Amino acid sequence: MEKHIDKECIFCKLANGELPTTSIYEDDDFNVILDISPASPGHCVVLPKTHAANLFELPEDYCSKIMPVAKKCAAAIKKSMGCAGLNVLQNNGEAAGQTVFHLHVHLIPRYDNDAVQISWDNKASLENAEELATKIKQGF
Image (tube, helix red, strand yellow):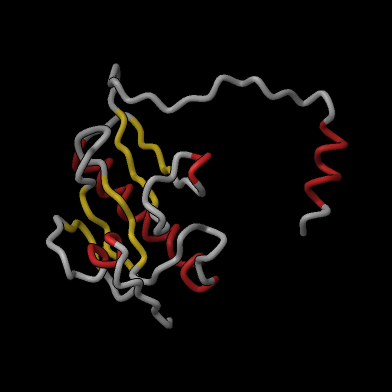
């Protein structure tokens, strides 16, 4: 896969070994590192070694490989950390909570009664479900 590296991007530097990290997994296309500001013990981030600001910019070949890497690492985290569950989280755009504009996938171990809060307040409704589905289908 062809790589594009943004010399100014901190996650490009972390993914490609220009800055020190605590890596749990690495291959030719991804580096999975412990999050520097973890939500819970064992929180890791899957970093593509190519620069893409978000999911919409990630090349298709990376898209097809990122979830198997996330699955493999999530299984290792769950097995070794003994967590009760695990969130797989990926944000696109500032409004969605993205703070670093290099696509990354969070693997957040969850423990019974932990303090991690990932929620939404369910203010949307499915009142106009058919209308919404039709509108979304127009985007393909």
